[in-house]
Image 1 (cartoon, one colour):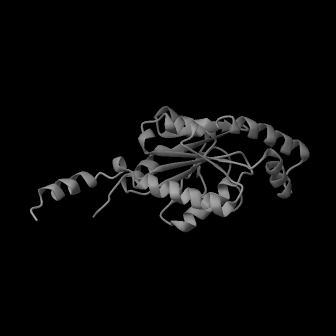
Image 2: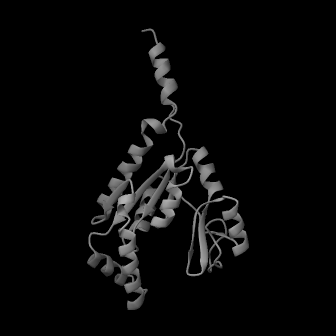
Length: 211
C-alpha cells in the first residue's frame, strides 16, 4: 500500500554538550533521506563554508526583509548576528514527503511550534545524565576557557528549564540507547494515522471488496 505523507519537522534541542549533534548525524546515517535544515545568517562565511550548503549567507537588510515577508520559520540574534530558518526549503521538503531535522534552541523550537507548520512538528529534548557530566564533556573538548564554560553551564540550566515543552525527552546516558530511542520515535511518528492520508482511500477500497 502506498503511504504518501507530508514530511516531518524534527526539532532536536539540548544544552551544549548533551550529544545532540552526534545523535543528529547518526540519525542521518541511519536514514539518508533525513536532511538538516540549512539556516540563514548575517555573519560572514568562515573558511571552507559554502553558501546554500552550510548556511544561506545574507546581509542584515536582506535578513530583515525575509522576516518582514514571513519567510522565516524562526529567527534570533546571537552575539550581534542574526540566524533563522527559511520557510521555503522546509515547505518544499514537506511537500515531497522528506523529513527535516532542526538543531535549534528552545526559543527556535517555540517559534516553529507556533507556526502554521505545527501539526507536522515532532519535538525532542536531549538531557545530559548530570550537570557534572555535562561540564566534563565541555572541558573534554579543550576549546573553551573556564569563563566560557561557566557561561555555557549557566545557559544550559536555562535551556533545561524548558524540557516540559517538548513531545519527547531523552536522557543521553548511553549514545547507542539514545539513538535507538530516536529511531523508534521517528518510526512511530511516521506511522501515525493522521500522518498517512493514503489510509483513508485504502480502507474505503477494502470495505468495498466482495470476497
